[in-house]
Amino acid sequence: MGKTVVEKIIDAHRVDRLGEDVIVVRLDAVFCHEITTPMAIADLVERGKDRVFDPTKIKAVIDHVSPAKDSKTALQGKILRDWARRHGIQDFFDIGRNGICHALFPEKGFVRPGYTIIMGDSHTCTYGAFGAFSAGVGTTDLEVGILKGLCAFPLQKTIRIELMGTLPEGVYAKDVILSVIGTLGVDGATSHVIEFCGPVIERMGMDGRMTICNMAIEAGATCGICYPDETTVDYLWPFIQGEYGDRTAALEAFRTWLPDPDADYARVIRQDVSNLKPMATFGFKPDQVKPAEEMQDIAVDQVYIGSCTNGRIEDLRVAASVLKGRRIHPRVRGIVSPATPAVFRQAMKEGILEIFMDAGFCVTNPTCGACLGMSNGILAEGEVCASTTNRNFNGRMGKGGMVHLMSPATAAASALAGHIAPAERRTP
Amino acid sequence: MSNPFSGNILFLDRDDINTDEIIPAKYLTEITKAALKPHLLEDLLLDGFSAPRDIPGKSAVVSRSNFGCGSSREHAPWAFEVNGIRLVIAESFARIFRQNMFNCGMMAVCLPEEVIDEVFRRFAGRPASVVTDLDRSMFEFRSDSDRWIVPFTLSEFEWKMIRAGGWVNFADATYA
Image (cartoon, rainbow over all chains, first blue to last red; front, side):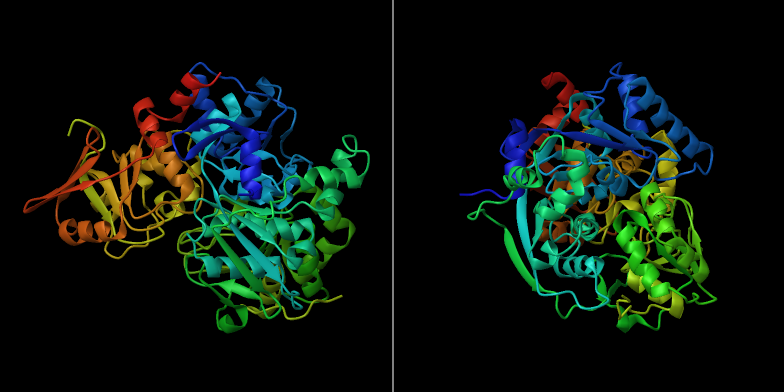
């Protein structure tokens, strides 16, 4: 029997097997941020084991609350900063260079096809867009990862989702993944890896692939994976050109991670996206999804464009194309948070930030902030937010607030309309 | 009740209880487990549930499917732990929450849907407790008028975590 992508990666990194169903793997990278890492550091210090397995394989960023909003978040940042310095972790990103981890680390070239990566953050599944196996873990797994470079995983089954057809105008990666989560349900892929493939993915850039893999966790999946191809090689080329003679050689090496033709899938789903509409969530679970056009009676108080799901340059370009030359509804507060300094700078160069500002948006620095109700756009009780983030849980963006998840295009259209409204047209 | 996995039950009769409901993100700025104690289940959407009234004195949770979905925050198991709850029994769990529980030396045990239904039917809505027999892999559910013994299974990995007191102890003793 052949192997799926995750089976190949885990086999290549296997260190131990614990019982029937748990494999201990060697990690290629351990990523850290200031919310879940300080408690791991504190425990290592308390145990007298304040060490790191390899400072070059640990990458750290202050991203969740940046700049610090109070003494507590300042202390969390300080603990991470001091620890990075103490252990000579060169790839530590503090304010001025920091961005949302799942946008920043790919941009810095820290992800490769076939890598094993953990982070104390559930949206670590994003890096599967590069053909890596990356998983969100808790602080204890992170702690052992930091100390030993190892992590234990239950055996992973694979669901293969083949996305066929052509995305209609105004329909994007976010709409695809919301629709997939609606199909699978919030636990439809628990302890599974999802391989996303087919012509829709093949034509999609890395930004869109990251949007899709980012939300695999919302169906319970350990990781979402796209097959490495020319698009992957092109994105990584600045970082890998020293390793490979040319792009063809890199592609050939990356292709070793593709699934075998006779790989065993728990489930294969084939979905044609040609008739897909702009989608939005209702309720408090990310699988509660329906076409945005059916929710136009819902007025919005705030529109938020950003996050590890949809704060990349492609997302900002699309939203700006909807907003260009127009003003958002007077009752709406618009907030856009470019996910990294590079995205911010690029958006500035292209005049995108000006379009947002002319439309009435507030442009914030890169941070996770509002997405999880930490800072930079928390809702008041009873308020409604049209958001490009990834979770609509009760209280997620502020106690008593309501979050509707949607694409940047639909969020922008909703900002103009003052209520949930699908973006039907893609402006050239 | 000689092990920490026994005691009075908090029944949470809902699917898909997520970690934002168990401990909202605004409390993730705390850097001690103890600081999480007053905020356990603060944002839980469940009719008739009152955290300050229902949590004190409880040592175990019984719930439905996909318990602990969402964020990877280990603050969720910790918030249970500092409230004296070290056992969650549910129909199913999200992967990260379940792993976090065992990584902390705590228990997250799946029972079949029909067994969970029966536990709710016979024991919810009145004072009830569970006694966990680790040697025989049995739960004994108890109320004033009822008793029911239910076997459970854990994987070899999960037993190793309970015996070692968690993943850091195990990994540190096992791997160079």
